[in-house]
Length: 125
Length: 109
Image (cartoon, rainbow over all chains, first blue to last red; front, top):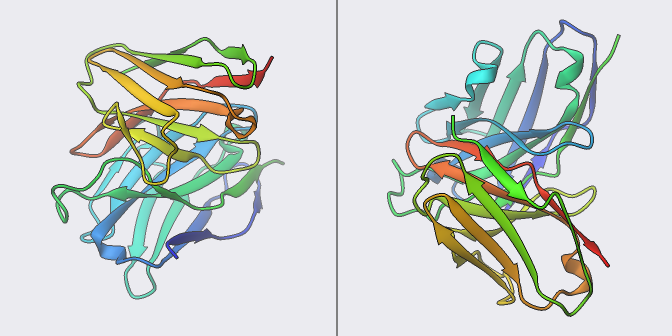
């Protein structure tokens, strides 16, 4: 079945970096993009950025420009999200989600249709 | 940046009744609007895309409508499993860029 499996929970100190992985299975990895979405405790959803698994093109939320890097490894069908210079307000559950790549599939159905289980990142001194 | 505003923040409805959730965009998003359902401790689930098209496996009691700046998600006859938080999301096809509303919590009356 189609699924995204994320890496485990992380605890980091302020100023450190975190790298979360998202391993895809059950579909052609390079036919889609991956979006990353985070959710602070008790809060709503915040889109962080998108990466094409086909060619590595990215588009990051302006708020996170300069602190976030998204990459993929097509040999293992895995996407990665690295966030640097962590602050306490980066404490959140981080989700990856399968997302269309209209460069690869122009008529792709929109919407994030498959999600990972979430990775809790806690930033605390 | 497009701002998505959902109302009400909390909606109390009895099982079997109809629920109507609203979402407003700060500028026109055409029909580039999706709805997601999230239950406690779970990842969001895609319900509706293109403002009115149900995603695969979504029951017919869920329907979406609207275009431009005003959108509605209607759940025709609430089941116990429908009590959750619902988010609207506008999307830009290229480059991919998204904004979520702040969510509406649908609770049992």
